[in-house]
Length: 335
Image: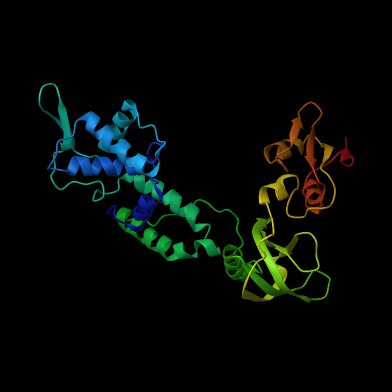
């Protein structure tokens, strides 16, 4: 399998490569070194290589202080290693005590090198993770690419890869088809018209809604909108939405929605009126370990002696629903 495969091209574009040291723009550094080692018209000392990397990186970040001697040694060692490209980097004497670096194979380049067994294994893991996003609008462009990459990896190893990860996503969820047009509306800041049918209620038409955010919670998708006649932001379940029309009208410029602030002190997607409360919950000893390993909120603090937790949040139905999964001793109490 050639390293010019689709996934490796994406790795280059994103500045990522599995197995590489995770420091500032590693793939950029490797490509700079690759060009230097391939340049038969100039000899590069160790310091020349460091200056070349620093000059190139400062073009994109003038404040960059430069890589260390140790970092450059690690980069060269990685390129030479089997985890990298097994690059045939040689040193040869120059004037005085100087030593120069170059490839001892004239046509070698890391961009032509084959992917090794370790990298193939890591690519397979990454592909399985990426595959879990298939069906979401922001990943639609990747679907054909994922299938092609899987084919290439299967051909490279002559082994049909077995799936070993599943995030539990439900591809048959009602309303999943609404993700694409609504994601488009949110990202392009366009108003939408749609019909909404609440559970146990009558359908009504929403016209000129200003969509500002999409969020998945508990295997359902929700759209957050500002709507005429409603003061606060609304959350609309995508499985209750139909007859969507994305308009050419741009959303109102004065609308402010900060997802981090909105979701900070709630569980799920429903934000009730009022201030956050400090709440204490006592649990049966057999349930306590589960809520410790899967906290219901980032504010959760555990008391192992009392088998209790405390949280600071605005209570809502999602919070109540989460607690029902556990054996509680009494009801939750505000403290």
